[in-house]
Structure formats: structure tokens, C-alpha cells
Length: 273
Length: 337
Ligand SMILES: Nc1ncnc2c1ncn2[C@@H]1O[C@H](COP(=O)(O)OP(=O)(O)O)[C@@H](O)[C@H]1O
Ligand SMILES: [Mg+2]
Image (tube, rainbow over all chains, first blue to last red; front, side):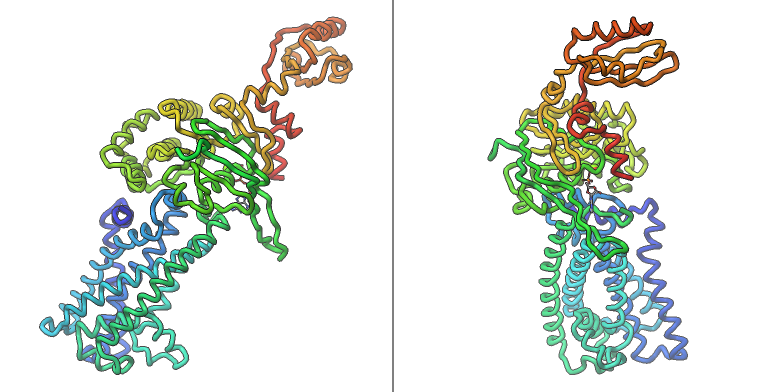
């Protein structure tokens, strides 16, 4: 139900063309810009293992912007734009489930963008994925765990968003931006100063992106030392553990934020109140 | 039916903490104080008060959107703060004067979606949607995207959303705010029809329109500055004032007649003069009706001619003035100053 609503809201923009532009062309062109930048900095060295590392990290990172930001953005959307959050809230539904449902739609559009980005990389940019060597089981298991994990992170942000009156949209975007830097999306963690690295090691997204790379292009990922000491299974274990930890924390944080919001009367509060 | 009472509040209070923009001192705003109300099942109960009286705050507490800072409230038999999950399936709420809804969904989709949250079977939901839209006179708009509706129609759609789930207790916060006269009449008629269809249905509405409270409600609570000042049937509230007989008299010319001259008559309790193009309109309260002769006598002495004379029934506005000492409009303009 909530997913259906999410789908309609996300997709029906008045104009299917605009929708396609926004949800697919934007991330794909983001990847294109990255490729050009890489080309300039590396002086056209697309054969280096660095290139697929960056390209894949960036491609899958689209899910972070879609799912995590999508779930938390639903709060802003319903409260500020549609003015329906309070009606959702008094309905006999489980609000966290509703918000996660809104994320499902973003997952679908995000998947299309990821797929196009990957296809473009393979067809035109020489991102070598040897399909015979891909560990599909690992890939899909990782993808599923990761998407659930991102949705739960989204819920955590949604809770914080619920509690804040101003700059709410900012929370989702800022977190997505920070994770981009700290999760080894476009550069290995050991590029960061030593004292910043623990942040990356604590983020489930770091292990998620690493595993996705390993499952698709095993040898390339192995060329980077950050997590080289860990086996696939160990990383999967860490990812699952951290996902469970963050998921549980999210549920409690959301509940807590929810009760604060009720105490302060923020559920139907709009920014320009 | 677990409890005969639809709504019950005990010493309910709400204080908002305000963060002063300049001074660090935190101000507190008492929005509700010591509210004790009971509403029985089947009642149409009105909360009447000027802007800022605390009506919306009370509704938000009763609909589980806001926690009280003191006291408690039960709705449909459950405590709103402790067991919101038990309250929510049994209630619904509509706020007037705002346009909510998913603009890209049609009227039917918007309404259908909400009905699903309440577990109304899909087929029944569609039947109800059609019937309710028919009742508010917008059935021809069922397939219109809600972003293409006028504000008035959006508000009607929103009202239908509240009734659609057949709540045991329905809260309407200023349902006719911002509607034109025709739509207002539609909505009021609709409310009454809906209640008539099932005697167990309870409706609490807030309004700052006196006539609305008077015409619609079984009982009315008059609320000002967060306190309930009186609560009874409109007729009983007005009877409190009925010991005075109220008269509206149009005279011409005024011929130097003053308010004081009229008040000097022993039986006159109230007198007001508002001048018109041709003369003046007098509004007079008398201890008893028979004292009217003496007032007319005064007019004759001053050579003031009576053009029109009518006895006026007291309104809830008079009740408010009697309780607060000022009219609701004065109370509001004072609030904003
Ligand atoms: N979220 C809030 N924070 C601070 N003050 C508020 C808030 N909501 C309402 N108020 C104040 O509480 C008082 C009562 O408001 P409200 O319940 O909206 O009155 P009404 O609905 O009768 O117009 C007003 O003085 C209003 O300014
Ligand atoms: Mg109000």
C-alpha cells in the first residue's frame, strides 16, 4: 500500500519524461562527470584497476541517494508539501513501515539508474566484468542486505527529520554526502587521514560497496589493500552485523524521535509556520 | 461499546515552550488549562472560541498528535497518550483551511488510499467514496487530479476523507474555514446527514462561527485563552441571558437622545446606539418586557419616531460577551496586538 503510494508519488510527476530525467538521467550523468574527471586526473589511464573501483563504487552509491534519502525525504514530503503527515500519523498504520514502503519505489527507480550506469560502463568505458567469474550469489545477497540496511539508515534519518523543524531536507543530503566520502565509494579508505578512517570502518556502506565490487570483479577489488585481510565471508559477516546494529538503533531512535515530536507538537509543523 | 463516553478529559493542560529569538529566557505559553469535558456517544459537540483559544491544540491532543503536559484524555475508551494504537483505528480528523492531499492522485485514488490504511474492503471503499462525493456534490470530480481542484473542492475532498473510514469519533477542526457560503451550507448539511445515519457516531467540531455552533451542535463548550468557560446546550447557554429581554429599535431622527438617557430608566440594563443614514439603531436590554412602554414613552417626549421594532433572541455571541466581557472579534484583535 505504502509502496504503491510511493510509486505513484515518485513516478507520476505530471510528466513521465521529467520523471525519467530526474530519477535516471541525473545519476547516470553524475557518473559521466566522474569519468571525465578521472580521465583528466589520471591522464586517460582507464586500464588501471582504480577506474572500475571508482566506477562501480559510484554506480552502486546511487542506491544510497535513492533508498536512504528517499525514506527520510518522505517525512518532509508528507509534512511540508502534501500536508498529509498528520493524517498518516493518526491512521492505524505503522509509520516506520509506511516510510519504508515509500523507499521501495525509490529502490525501483534507483535500480534502473544503477543498471543503466553499469551497462554504459561495460559497453562504452571498458569496465571489464567477466560474467563467467561473477559471484552471483554473493552479489545478490550483498545487494539485498545493503538495500535493507540503507532503508533502515533512512528510517533513522527520518526520525531525526521528524524532530527538526528547519533544514530537514538537508539531513538526508548531508548524510548521503558524508557517506560518499567515508565509505570508500570513489577512493579507498586509506587515502583518508588516519584519524578519519575509523568512521569509514564503522559504516556498513564501506563493507557493502567492497563486497559488491568483489563479487563483480574479484581481482580488481583485491588490488586495494583497505580490506584485503578479510575474506568475503568475513566482510559479509561484518556487513550483516553492522546492518543489524544500525537497523536496531534506527528502530529505537525513530521511536524516541517520534515521542519527542509528539511532545513538542512537531508532527504537523511546517517550516514556514 | 466499551465505554458510554466518546471523549473524556480530566484537568487537561498543554504548555508550549517558546524559544525567544533574542532573549535566551524561555517563555512558556499556556495553550490549554484544566480542561474537563465529557462527550457522549452520538453527540455533535462544538468547541467555540476565538483564534488562539486552544481549539486546535485540544484536537491535536485528542487525536494523538500531541502529548498533553498535564491531565489525561480518553477517546473511544482509550487513553490518547498511553494507548494511541487503540485510539487511532476508531477516530479520524479533518483540518479546515488547508489543502492537503497528493496532488498527482485523483480524488478517488487519494480517498481510496486512506481507506486502505483503515482496512476498509476495497469494493466497499469505492462505494462509500461515490456515495460521499455525491453527498457533497462533487461526484463529477471523482477522476480529477486533486491538484486541479479549487481550494474549496480540495477541502471537501479532505472532509470526505474524514467520514470515509466511518470513525466512531470524528474530529473536525474548523471544517468550514475559508469556504464560500454555498460550500459552507453543503458541508453543514452533510455533517448533519451523516450523523443522522447512525446514532452511535460522535462528532467534535471546532469553530469560531457563532451561528455554526448554534445551528449544528447538541452541546457547545465556549473556550477562551485555553480555558473552558461554559459547556451546555446552546439553548441553555442562551437562557442564562434570557432574563433580559433584548430589543432592536430603529428610530428617526435621533433628536439628541443619548445612551445615558436610556440607561437612566430603571428597567434598562443595556443600551447601545449605532447611527445610520436616516437615524439610529438602538439595542436595548430590559429587565422585563413590560418595561418597553416606558422606553417608548421616552421616545415620544423627545419626539423620536420608532420606524421598526423587533425583539431579539440572544445569540451565542451574547453568551460569549457575557462570559468574557468582550466580543470574540475584540478578543482576537487584542490577541494579535
Ligand atoms: N506548536 C506551537 N508552538 C507554540 N505555540 C503554539 C503552537 N501551536 C499553537 N500555539 C499557540 O497556542 C495557542 C492556542 O493555539 P490553537 O490551539 O491553534 O488555537 P485555536 O485553534 O483555537 O485558534 C495560540 O496562542 C498559539 O499561538
Ligand atoms: Mg485552530
